[in-house]
Image (tube, rainbow, N blue to C red; front, side, top):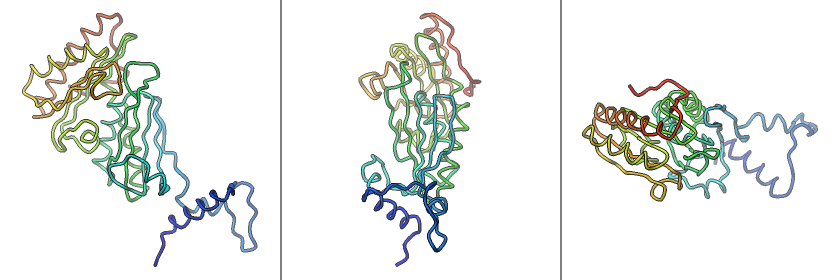
Length: 274
Protein backbone atom coordinates (compact mmCIF):
# COMPACT_ATOMS: atom_id res chain seq x y z
CA UNK A 1 0.00 0.00 0.00
CA UNK A 2 1.38 3.39 -0.98
CA UNK A 3 1.16 6.12 1.68
CA UNK A 4 1.13 9.75 0.61
CA UNK A 5 4.29 11.54 1.75
CA UNK A 6 2.40 14.41 3.34
CA UNK A 7 0.15 12.06 5.28
CA UNK A 8 3.15 10.10 6.55
CA UNK A 9 4.99 13.23 7.60
CA UNK A 10 1.92 14.52 9.41
CA UNK A 11 1.63 11.24 11.32
CA UNK A 12 5.26 11.43 12.39
CA UNK A 13 4.94 15.04 13.56
CA UNK A 14 1.72 14.30 15.46
CA UNK A 15 3.32 11.32 17.18
CA UNK A 16 6.31 13.41 18.24
CA UNK A 17 4.02 16.09 19.67
CA UNK A 18 2.00 13.47 21.57
CA UNK A 19 5.22 12.34 23.25
CA UNK A 20 6.08 15.88 24.25
CA UNK A 21 8.88 16.26 21.74
CA UNK A 22 9.08 19.81 20.43
CA UNK A 23 10.53 20.32 16.97
CA UNK A 24 12.82 23.33 16.65
CA UNK A 25 14.08 23.32 13.04
CA UNK A 26 16.76 25.93 13.75
CA UNK A 27 18.52 23.86 16.42
CA UNK A 28 18.35 20.33 14.99
CA UNK A 29 21.73 18.73 14.28
CA UNK A 30 22.23 16.72 11.13
CA UNK A 31 22.28 12.97 11.43
CA UNK A 32 25.12 10.82 10.13
CA UNK A 33 23.19 10.45 6.90
CA UNK A 34 23.05 14.21 6.42
CA UNK A 35 19.34 14.52 7.38
CA UNK A 36 18.26 17.79 8.97
CA UNK A 37 14.80 18.45 10.48
CA UNK A 38 14.69 21.85 8.78
CA UNK A 39 15.12 20.12 5.40
CA UNK A 40 12.43 17.64 6.43
CA UNK A 41 9.88 20.33 7.17
CA UNK A 42 10.73 22.54 4.22
CA UNK A 43 10.39 19.63 1.79
CA UNK A 44 6.77 18.88 2.79
CA UNK A 45 3.37 20.54 2.90
CA UNK A 46 2.85 20.11 6.65
CA UNK A 47 3.41 23.70 7.77
CA UNK A 48 0.37 25.98 7.29
CA UNK A 49 1.01 28.69 4.73
CA UNK A 50 0.45 32.41 4.92
CA UNK A 51 -1.09 33.71 1.70
CA UNK A 52 -1.59 37.42 2.34
CA UNK A 53 -3.36 40.22 4.18
CA UNK A 54 -5.40 43.28 3.35
CA UNK A 55 -5.91 46.31 5.58
CA UNK A 56 -9.49 46.30 4.32
CA UNK A 57 -11.47 44.75 7.14
CA UNK A 58 -8.24 43.56 8.84
CA UNK A 59 -8.23 40.50 6.60
CA UNK A 60 -5.82 37.57 6.56
CA UNK A 61 -5.69 34.66 4.11
CA UNK A 62 -4.03 31.29 4.87
CA UNK A 63 -3.74 27.76 3.50
CA UNK A 64 -3.39 24.46 5.39
CA UNK A 65 -1.94 22.00 2.87
CA UNK A 66 -2.63 18.93 5.04
CA UNK A 67 -5.06 19.57 7.90
CA UNK A 68 -4.80 17.39 10.99
CA UNK A 69 -7.44 14.66 10.90
CA UNK A 70 -8.51 15.22 14.51
CA UNK A 71 -9.16 18.90 13.86
CA UNK A 72 -10.91 18.11 10.61
CA UNK A 73 -13.33 15.86 12.49
CA UNK A 74 -14.32 18.76 14.77
CA UNK A 75 -14.62 21.56 12.24
CA UNK A 76 -18.18 22.34 11.18
CA UNK A 77 -17.63 21.72 7.48
CA UNK A 78 -20.17 20.71 4.87
CA UNK A 79 -17.62 18.48 3.14
CA UNK A 80 -14.34 16.88 4.15
CA UNK A 81 -11.18 18.07 2.37
CA UNK A 82 -7.55 17.50 3.34
CA UNK A 83 -6.50 20.91 1.97
CA UNK A 84 -8.20 23.95 3.53
CA UNK A 85 -8.04 27.66 2.82
CA UNK A 86 -8.99 30.24 5.45
CA UNK A 87 -10.13 33.82 4.93
CA UNK A 88 -10.69 35.63 8.22
CA UNK A 89 -11.50 39.27 8.98
CA UNK A 90 -12.55 41.61 11.75
CA UNK A 91 -15.19 43.40 9.67
CA UNK A 92 -16.97 43.22 6.32
CA UNK A 93 -18.60 39.77 6.13
CA UNK A 94 -20.64 40.46 2.99
CA UNK A 95 -17.71 41.74 0.91
CA UNK A 96 -15.60 38.74 1.92
CA UNK A 97 -18.33 36.28 1.00
CA UNK A 98 -18.83 37.97 -2.37
CA UNK A 99 -15.07 38.02 -2.99
CA UNK A 100 -14.86 34.32 -2.18
CA UNK A 101 -17.85 33.67 -4.42
CA UNK A 102 -15.77 34.98 -7.32
CA UNK A 103 -12.75 32.95 -6.21
CA UNK A 104 -14.47 29.57 -6.28
CA UNK A 105 -15.79 30.27 -9.79
CA UNK A 106 -12.25 30.34 -11.16
CA UNK A 107 -10.58 27.58 -9.10
CA UNK A 108 -11.15 23.93 -8.29
CA UNK A 109 -12.28 24.71 -4.73
CA UNK A 110 -15.47 24.65 -2.69
CA UNK A 111 -16.73 26.73 0.23
CA UNK A 112 -17.27 24.39 3.18
CA UNK A 113 -17.96 26.78 6.09
CA UNK A 114 -18.98 30.40 6.63
CA UNK A 115 -19.41 31.95 10.08
CA UNK A 116 -20.19 35.55 10.98
CA UNK A 117 -18.78 36.53 14.37
CA UNK A 118 -20.22 39.54 16.15
CA UNK A 119 -17.21 41.78 15.75
CA UNK A 120 -16.54 44.72 13.39
CA UNK A 121 -14.13 46.10 15.99
CA UNK A 122 -17.04 47.69 17.84
CA UNK A 123 -19.21 48.57 14.84
CA UNK A 124 -22.75 47.47 14.02
CA UNK A 125 -22.00 44.45 11.83
CA UNK A 126 -19.99 41.24 11.60
CA UNK A 127 -16.53 39.90 11.06
CA UNK A 128 -16.09 36.75 9.00
CA UNK A 129 -14.57 33.27 8.95
CA UNK A 130 -14.66 31.54 5.56
CA UNK A 131 -13.16 28.10 5.00
CA UNK A 132 -12.75 26.55 1.58
CA UNK A 133 -11.61 23.08 0.63
CA UNK A 134 -9.73 21.60 -2.30
CA UNK A 135 -7.51 18.76 -3.44
CA UNK A 136 -4.43 20.75 -4.43
CA UNK A 137 -2.75 23.40 -2.21
CA UNK A 138 -2.00 25.51 -5.29
CA UNK A 139 -5.72 25.70 -6.14
CA UNK A 140 -6.60 26.69 -2.58
CA UNK A 141 -3.86 29.32 -2.39
CA UNK A 142 -5.02 30.75 -5.70
CA UNK A 143 -8.61 30.97 -4.48
CA UNK A 144 -7.57 32.79 -1.32
CA UNK A 145 -5.44 35.18 -3.38
CA UNK A 146 -8.32 35.86 -5.78
CA UNK A 147 -10.60 36.61 -2.83
CA UNK A 148 -8.06 39.00 -1.30
CA UNK A 149 -7.65 40.78 -4.62
CA UNK A 150 -11.43 41.18 -5.00
CA UNK A 151 -11.97 42.94 -1.67
CA UNK A 152 -11.32 46.43 -3.04
CA UNK A 153 -14.18 45.81 -5.48
CA UNK A 154 -16.68 44.21 -3.10
CA UNK A 155 -16.09 46.95 -0.51
CA UNK A 156 -17.03 49.50 -3.18
CA UNK A 157 -20.66 49.68 -2.02
CA UNK A 158 -20.03 49.74 1.71
CA UNK A 159 -20.85 53.20 3.06
CA UNK A 160 -19.91 54.31 6.57
CA UNK A 161 -20.71 57.09 9.02
CA UNK A 162 -20.06 57.29 12.78
CA UNK A 163 -23.69 56.26 13.32
CA UNK A 164 -23.94 53.21 11.07
CA UNK A 165 -23.32 51.72 7.66
CA UNK A 166 -24.90 50.48 4.44
CA UNK A 167 -23.83 47.52 2.38
CA UNK A 168 -24.94 46.56 -1.12
CA UNK A 169 -23.78 43.53 -3.08
CA UNK A 170 -24.69 42.15 -6.49
CA UNK A 171 -23.64 39.29 -8.73
CA UNK A 172 -25.17 38.20 -12.01
CA UNK A 173 -24.25 34.59 -11.25
CA UNK A 174 -24.12 33.38 -7.66
CA UNK A 175 -21.78 30.53 -6.73
CA UNK A 176 -21.00 28.41 -3.68
CA UNK A 177 -20.23 31.17 -1.17
CA UNK A 178 -23.49 33.07 -1.74
CA UNK A 179 -25.41 29.80 -1.73
CA UNK A 180 -23.94 28.57 1.55
CA UNK A 181 -24.14 31.90 3.35
CA UNK A 182 -27.41 33.31 2.04
CA UNK A 183 -29.27 30.54 0.21
CA UNK A 184 -28.76 32.18 -3.18
CA UNK A 185 -29.62 29.89 -6.12
CA UNK A 186 -26.38 28.88 -7.85
CA UNK A 187 -26.07 30.40 -11.31
CA UNK A 188 -28.79 33.02 -10.72
CA UNK A 189 -28.49 36.74 -10.05
CA UNK A 190 -28.27 37.62 -6.35
CA UNK A 191 -28.43 40.86 -4.40
CA UNK A 192 -27.80 41.87 -0.78
CA UNK A 193 -29.24 45.07 0.69
CA UNK A 194 -28.20 45.92 4.24
CA UNK A 195 -28.59 48.89 6.57
CA UNK A 196 -27.42 49.63 10.10
CA UNK A 197 -29.03 50.57 12.41
CA UNK A 198 -31.35 47.70 11.50
CA UNK A 199 -34.44 49.85 10.98
CA UNK A 200 -32.81 51.53 8.00
CA UNK A 201 -32.34 48.10 6.49
CA UNK A 202 -36.07 47.38 6.84
CA UNK A 203 -36.98 50.48 4.82
CA UNK A 204 -34.26 49.80 2.25
CA UNK A 205 -35.64 46.28 1.76
CA UNK A 206 -39.19 47.52 1.28
CA UNK A 207 -38.11 50.10 -1.28
CA UNK A 208 -35.99 47.61 -3.19
CA UNK A 209 -38.71 44.95 -3.43
CA UNK A 210 -41.29 47.48 -4.59
CA UNK A 211 -38.94 48.81 -7.27
CA UNK A 212 -38.43 45.63 -9.29
CA UNK A 213 -39.87 42.15 -9.64
CA UNK A 214 -37.48 40.03 -7.58
CA UNK A 215 -37.69 36.94 -5.41
CA UNK A 216 -37.15 37.52 -1.69
CA UNK A 217 -34.96 34.75 -0.30
CA UNK A 218 -34.90 35.91 3.31
CA UNK A 219 -34.70 38.90 5.63
CA UNK A 220 -32.13 38.95 8.44
CA UNK A 221 -32.40 41.11 11.56
CA UNK A 222 -30.68 41.25 14.98
CA UNK A 223 -32.68 38.33 16.38
CA UNK A 224 -33.18 36.39 13.17
CA UNK A 225 -30.38 35.39 10.83
CA UNK A 226 -27.49 37.54 12.10
CA UNK A 227 -25.11 37.14 15.04
CA UNK A 228 -27.22 39.73 16.89
CA UNK A 229 -25.71 42.53 14.84
CA UNK A 230 -27.60 45.80 14.54
CA UNK A 231 -28.37 45.23 10.86
CA UNK A 232 -31.40 44.66 8.69
CA UNK A 233 -30.66 42.92 5.39
CA UNK A 234 -32.69 41.38 2.62
CA UNK A 235 -31.43 38.73 0.21
CA UNK A 236 -33.00 38.73 -3.24
CA UNK A 237 -32.71 36.78 -6.47
CA UNK A 238 -34.21 36.82 -9.95
CA UNK A 239 -33.59 38.40 -13.31
CA UNK A 240 -30.18 40.09 -13.40
CA UNK A 241 -31.51 43.50 -14.47
CA UNK A 242 -34.28 43.49 -11.88
CA UNK A 243 -31.95 42.47 -9.05
CA UNK A 244 -29.48 45.19 -9.96
CA UNK A 245 -32.26 47.79 -10.14
CA UNK A 246 -33.63 46.75 -6.75
CA UNK A 247 -30.19 46.94 -5.11
CA UNK A 248 -29.60 50.43 -6.51
CA UNK A 249 -33.01 51.61 -5.29
CA UNK A 250 -32.25 50.30 -1.81
CA UNK A 251 -28.92 52.07 -1.85
CA UNK A 252 -30.51 55.40 -2.82
CA UNK A 253 -32.98 55.47 0.06
CA UNK A 254 -30.41 54.09 2.49
CA UNK A 255 -27.95 56.89 1.78
CA UNK A 256 -30.65 59.48 2.45
CA UNK A 257 -31.77 57.85 5.69
CA UNK A 258 -28.30 57.22 7.15
CA UNK A 259 -27.27 60.82 6.47
CA UNK A 260 -30.10 61.97 8.76
CA UNK A 261 -28.10 60.62 11.70
CA UNK A 262 -25.23 62.97 10.91
CA UNK A 263 -22.33 62.79 8.52
CA UNK A 264 -22.21 61.87 4.86
CA UNK A 265 -22.06 58.12 4.16
CA UNK A 266 -18.80 57.43 2.34
CA UNK A 267 -17.35 54.46 0.53
CA UNK A 268 -13.59 53.90 0.57
CA UNK A 269 -13.50 52.36 -2.91
CA UNK A 270 -15.36 53.03 -6.17
CA UNK A 271 -18.89 51.65 -6.41
CA UNK A 272 -19.18 48.60 -8.67
CA UNK A 273 -22.98 48.41 -8.79
CA UNK A 274 -24.05 50.71 -11.62
